Length: 159
Image 1 (cartoon, rainbow, N blue to C red):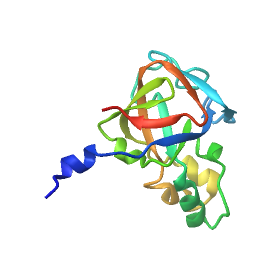
Image 2: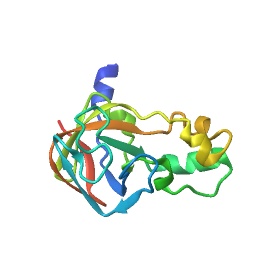
Image 3: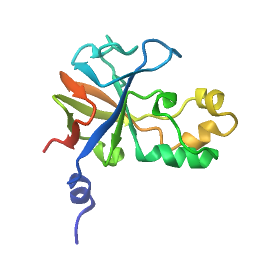
């Protein structure tokens, strides 16, 4: 019989960065970029959380959840920028990164929690927007090692 702890530690999949966005200030239009500098003490350079050394330096969204959210809202698709996260990752269950450090490009990040939706989703999507996002909001992370993160970079756990 395989122990649950062993299953949690087994993550052979490698994801990749499919989208990167920076939030220059609260509620400002997202700036879509092909790469970003992740700095240990400053966060993502150009993002509104830059300069903070808290648990929410980086927000990550699972790209596969975009179609789920769209479906729940009766939409054909959703632009990742509207969800106000920094990085969309494809091919990897982000919740499996809990209690782990992971590498994206040259940077190393550490899972710090789930990124729950806020009431702003009701403003963006209308009634039901908040609840459509519940369970699909992604994760938050802090930067452990500075480095460049580029679109199409791999995302994998550190052993």
